[in-house]
Length: 234
Image 1: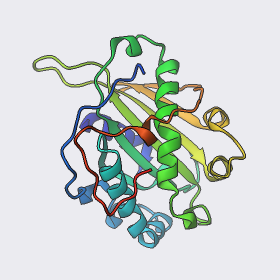
Image 2: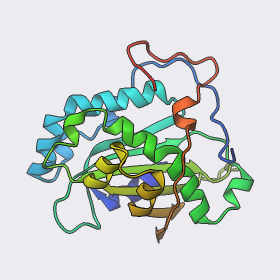
Image 3: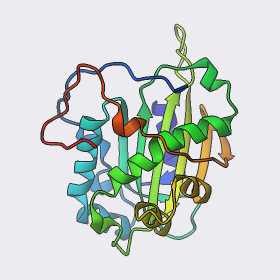
């Protein structure tokens, strides 16, 4: 996980998918999942971080409690600058690992097929979690949203390092606003997003993904797990 996180840190400055294993009841989310203020590299980033600190912490706690099969990476939530954009554009970024059993049939698909399936399953749902506070869409200094999803390719053997597939979906704020207002659907969201992919630490570049309705992240419940009653999971 750490090597994939470091790789993406260079990019972001300052039915076949299997089911996750059961988890214990939630405790408190780790505070280091939110990028601290002193790690920002511009006044724009620091201003956003200060203004929306409570919202970022609530996002971290909401995912921790409502989607326990997702692990937000260290400093995985913050107002990052996508490196492929020339200006100091700031995107609210969410970087997660999916705890799911590797599936040989799923992994045998072309990278575009795997990326499309994971985009459809997680990106629309996580976007809704990220935009639960309406003021974010009205924030003039926020330029867009990034969702990064990683999943294990296969169970590592003894002394083997785990290898992950990763996609990073970059979506400008007007596109996200159109999606949330139902002016475009998941298919159009996928078509207009910029999606980059990695095979382990090997950058595969931009991939074209398809999008379709997938309610798994909204409807799945982990057996024996009870979320914190302070959170409404939907």
